Amino acid sequence: MKRIWVASFTAAVIIAIVLLVAGSPNVTANDQPSAATAEVKIDNFIFGPQTITVPVGATVTWRNKDDIPHTSVSTEGVFKSKVLDTDEAFSYTFTKAGTYPYYCTIHPKMTGKVVVQ
Amino acid sequence: MQGLIDQKLQDLNDDGIDRRGFLKCMAWAGTGLVWTMSGGIPVSRAFAKTADRSASKGADFTFVQISDSHIGFNKPANPDVTATLQTAINKINAMPHKPDFIIHTGDLSQLSKPSEFDTLDQVLKGASAKPTYFVPGEHDMLTDNGEQYLQRYGKGTRGSGWYSFDHKGVHFVGLVNVANLKAGGMGSLGHEQLEWFEDDLKGRSASTPIVLFAHIPLWTIYPDWGWGTEDSEQALSYVKRFGSVTVLNGHIHQVMQKIESKVSFHTAMSTAFPQPAPGTAPSAGPMKVPADQLQRVLGITDVNYLVSGRSLAVIDSPLGDSEPTSAGSGGSTGGR
Image (cartoon, rainbow over all chains, first blue to last red):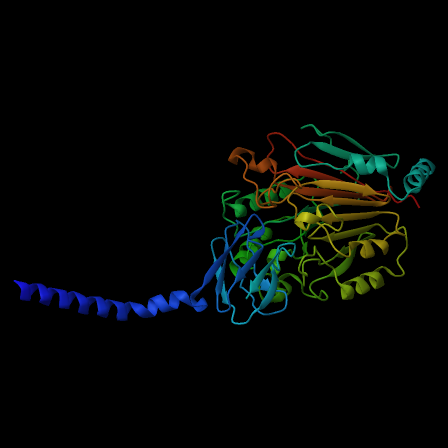
């Protein structure tokens, strides 16, 4: 009886170790900024939030919730979305720290900023 | 009479702005105003169903402005924009006087797709009035820097699609203020176009009536929504010496008018969907109205020109005949 218990315990420990090892890449990835994501919602002709701060390596996704097409284009030519119709999205991964102003080339009054730290 | 007109014009010009006109000429879609010229002063009155179209009687010629067809748009504000454009064309075809031509002030398409332009061409083919003169809206230049627009609608034009032509003594100038827009700004004509425009007007008699047409208003209506053109002031300085200037725009999907000295500004309804009055909604997005009221807020603009008075009368008609809710007629006279 006792032997069985030891065997079970050993098996459980082994399984736990296996799980820990298998799961570890996910855990590590989540702790690193490279997997960070953020979303900017385009709604009512506004980029929301207008200024978004993300860590280096983060991917920002712009999603258009308006009935009118918009774009998200870096003022300094760093990134440029295609025309986003309703519910379409565009993503860009920021690999360098800095401030990235952008605007909608169709409605240039719409402006926003990504701050990468 | 001519003396009286001159006197009135003088009165208007004393401070450069006709304040009375400025305050009274702001006609919103749905308010039902018609503007007529009376001794050089624009007069408004309620537009009744039986509103006489006397402006068109004896007119030397008539043309029609349509705008903002947004072919390809299929959201709740108007699931069938092709049908409403067709209604607009039917209305033009039913006019007692056949217009000499049509001006489309841009946003022909929703997404600059070839299929959208194809559909527009197909519908316009059925118009009895030909040709149609175009200027692009921002929706027509979404991809390829407007190359496709230029190939289809801008043959023989300059730059991003600007040009001029003469018709029965009136000089028409189509301007493009939707190209190369800068972050944070409004519509823009740009240096190259402004230079061309100044040159285009050189040597023309001040008595030549001028009609300018462009997509985004050439006067600042509501900067928060980008409803204006950054360098329009410079463009308008070139037409100051002319006795009669009419500016026709689209983009804002509603009728607005202003008369400033000898320049009368006018925006047209859309054939696709209405947009809210400035500042009355969180954004300038499409306005959903009950289906049975949609045709009251879509429409066409009919412009009559009389050589004798060198005047243009502008009449807006909603697509729906049930109850005219919006009409305006503004004109400017050249009494020189």
